[in-house]
Amino acid sequence: MEMSSQLQSRLQRSAERLAALGQAVRLELVRQLLRAHPDGMVAGALQRAVDVPASTLSHHLEALARVGLVEQQREGRFQRYRVSEETLRDLLGFLLEECCTSSKVVPISSLRRTGRSK
Image 1 (cartoon, helix red, strand yellow):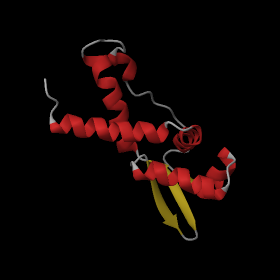
Image 2 (cartoon, one colour):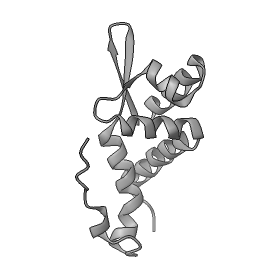
Image 3 (cartoon, one colour):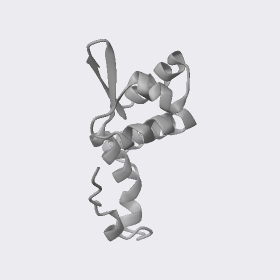
Image 4 (cartoon, one colour):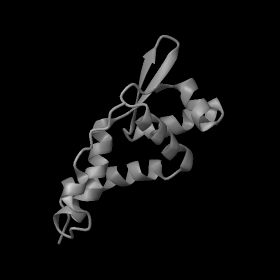
């Protein structure tokens, strides 16, 4: 059975996003940004949180932004970074589709949003 071009495109996009997350500093950056959601964090605060040089931070944030996992916004002299909700939902949805529809590895009821308040 041949894959549709839409599925091939989604597989490729998801693989690129997972590859970007496949580095410890990048994964920790996403975790920090998720903790700070929806406000996000400025680059200096992120740098302190993950304890890496500014050039290293810039490299990792650029890799995450390239695949759409992180969005940036200029605020005066600062750059604010946020997790892209839409991209993250798409990636998680892609990973969970099969386990929740055909194999039932993860019951769909366990994926309901939990109302976490700040």
